Length: 302
Image 1 (cartoon, rainbow, N blue to C red):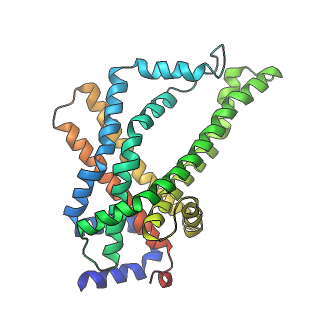
Image 2: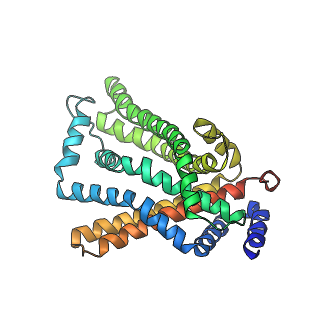
Image 3: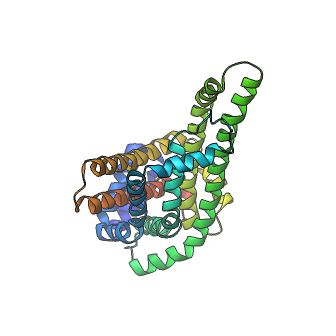
């Protein structure tokens, strides 16, 4: 079988792949089964960008929503409101609330189906939609468990950052070191880079841990995150670049949607942007699965 021979050759050299080769291999897999991946993008991944774009539309149409959420977050922090949270925080909270239902349902099912299809491709099996969707449903619970632990870790990072942003400036002000505003931006500048690096690292771990949860029996939740950390040892730079490429794609589509929304969007532009975002989600998941095979030793795959 040509497909099986090609897959075996790719697996044997997968540990040598860099970021560009992983991207090229992911595109090759997408081209092998375009109808399957297109179906996944439409029926499983599209609810996420639809929810995201609806939240963007609501925030654009009702600008008082972030202001109201900002007042709610300001109240427990300080009575004078001298240390307001950035406007990005309430908008992010609004996006999370709107997108969470589709993230934990359709999106996880789409990721499971995509990862199973990549695995079948490397095993020389033509993806069967019914069988893959049944197996994806069985993997969904494990993916929810893994995503829950990823969310807890990210929430802890944000909690530490926000706590430092509002306690350290008050302490510095109490000792007469500087004003609260100056202390706020000083702490933000000091902790900003470590926070971004830690956040990116957790995101990369979560992406690889989801692949482990689908492909390896009995590995999910916190265990899959720990195993992902060991598996990508020495390949962190490649993983970060892959995540950066995906996030740049997501953000470009979001910016394009916001731009067209401000200028006046045609009826056909919405579905096109949803389709583009969904295909980037598919590509991101395929790259994560290919990266898994690039990290996993050849002799332990069989």
